[in-house]
Amino acid sequence: MRKGTGRAHSFPKVRLPAVEAVTLEEVQRRRDLFVKVMKLREQIGPIGIPTDELIRQVRAQEDEPED
Image (tube, rainbow, N blue to C red; front, side, top):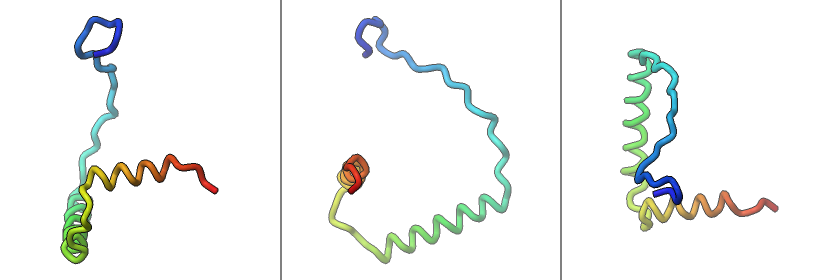
């Protein structure tokens, strides 16, 4: 809850652009990419770190100043 608003939920009003129709070629491209990613995941196997921790570490690296 935001302090001082007195409302439990207040969401900004956002206008989204119109959704374009997805072509059959794009659907097939996404399916092919999904198959490729799943094969790579199977080859790599478990990496010994939960996803949330991996994301936290990547974000922390992004926040570090560059040399």
